[in-house]
Image (cartoon, rainbow, N blue to C red; front, side, top):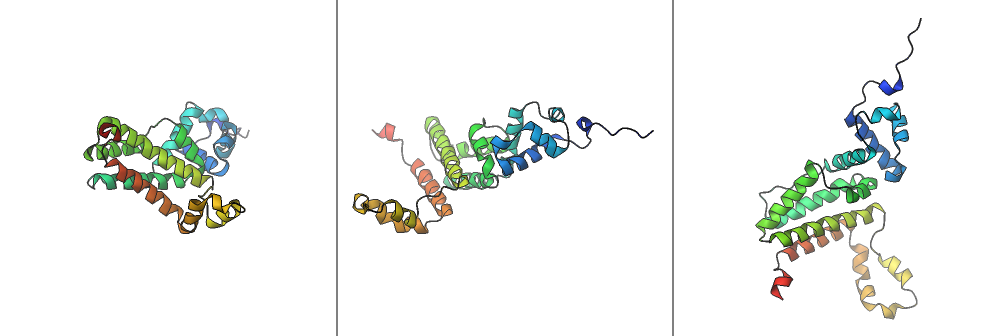
Length: 218
């Protein structure tokens, strides 16, 4: 008698790492909203319950995906100047996110976990302390830098770039005199690359951190 095939729920070779890898691949293709455990199981060639033998819940799976996305992030060299640590660190954060743009909303919504995400937080806080900031201002600076990167990348991932000269010309047609300053900078926007916009904005934030606390100076 020919032995019956091994049940799919016990398919050999299924590991936690493989589950996370295939989940990220699926999110890259269909986004977080398109992710289902049933669809993931079909991709893996197993029964849905087999996945839970490696990941306890969908929430835990999404946390693992965020950790996988950020695993590609290179932490800054702590020996650099404190401001350069911030520029390098949050620049690397953006690069890691852009490798998986459809996963960026997950990174924005999930609680910070994992060695890389906590590693960047530790490195940036250490740099801010070296820069002479007090704990309260360190927290505000950290939150601001994270929000800047996530907001910028979410815009990139959605394909919504800042206005170009052509867009402005079309949008403002018929009432250009009402927006003289917008029209003045339109040529700059047209030639200002996305990378340049990000880098300039990041440096503006970091340079402002070296200034004393306005609340204390008032």
